[in-house]
Amino acid sequence: MFQFQTGSNAFQIIVDEERFDISNAHRFRHEFDALCPDDIQSVDIDFTRVELIDSSGVGALLNIRKRIHLPTPVALRNSCPSVLGVLQTMRLHRVFQLDDGLPTPLQDTRFDLDQLPG
Image 1 (cartoon, rainbow, N blue to C red):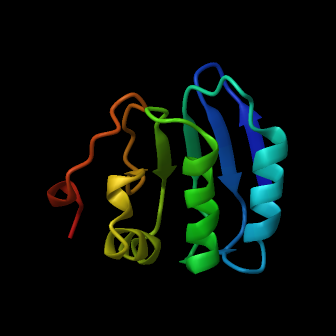
Image 2: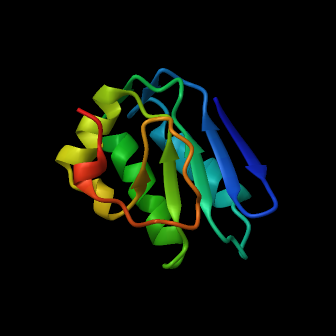
């Protein structure tokens, strides 16, 4: 299940599933396209429950980048170490703001790989 909320400064998405993969990526894309406001300032995605991401999930995230225009920041919040590992291996820290659950401002989309824990 996905929860989409329009906040004052961000379009917020909660991925309320343990897997973000082929089983739900198409539904995510469809719901995002239908619910995303045109005047979006930032996207904030909460991955607290996600334990696994596959190429379909990554493709759904990249679809967001295609749908909205730069410099609109897209932040992936509260990713577990296994999800962070996949995203870092694919060099997606250059496309998305990644964090490990520590609060960071949405406006700062720069992220240095050396800042990652571990």
